[in-house]
Image (cartoon, rainbow, N blue to C red; front, side):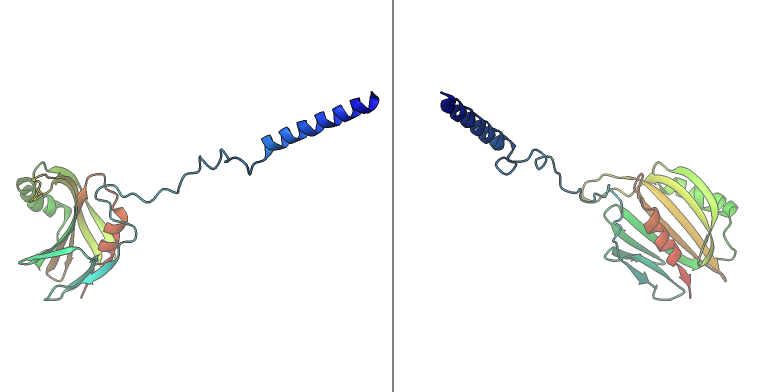
Length: 199
């Protein structure tokens, strides 16, 4: 009788151990942690944001006078003394010519702003300041307005503009950078304006 009781207890312990072992074997069932692991998010650039890995190339007009870096691969259009670089929603416009006097915040406000008010739909005035760049001081005008309508869709974006006026020895270069309002192009625009050099 005693032997039977000992054997019964041994069988009971063995059975319980097997059941417990099956329930705790992590290799026999998928881990709940593995189902919650997510892939690392990929970089997503909002509309108008120039990628951080954008490459730049030097541009020099046919007549010389200055150089400036522009994003590589952007389309280029030349209209008289103005050259325009575009890509999707962003635009760089460079106009150069002779000037009798150095531009000032006052001259930009009285001479340039009225022209832009007529030319730029939904023009909104920003600020006029004097900023320093490696090439020297420039008058910076910021403003907002609608871009030229897309030739395919007919839609226009509401853009933020930065217009830099550089001057040296009777020559003026106006460098206008624009992209959708809200786009974070502070670093790319700084690369462009810092690269401007007189020759």
